[in-house]
Length: 149
Image 1 (cartoon, rainbow, N blue to C red):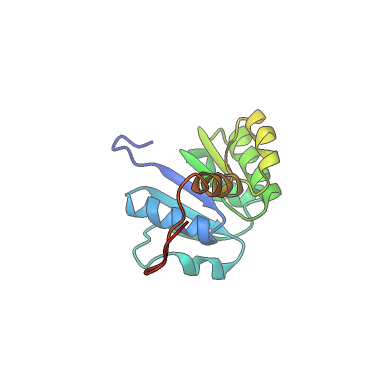
Image 2: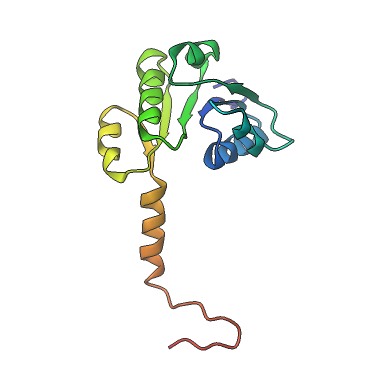
């Protein structure tokens, strides 16, 4: 982290999740590198996004090395493929010694294994399921003119 609190963040996967994070972190003043294998994925980045766009396969060591992963404060592996996210996260953590690595996982059961490897996880599946379960505790929302029972 720089002396002014800005982070150097590498985001792997620039789909809906990755581009949202890249846009937000860039808007907050952090230095961001967004990496995706598909050039079209960068369409989700806003006009205000001030970071770098790198077309490449982050599962390849050379792509991470060329983009200064060893200098990163944070790596977020946000592809839609749990296996790619694990590989990128492990390389970032073990080889480049990135202080904080967070991986998106689709399958909740994989979270325990990732955590045993020292990798933080975010599982949209589990988060959404918990929100649905919490909503069951609230009264249903009625449309205009409709009553609930």
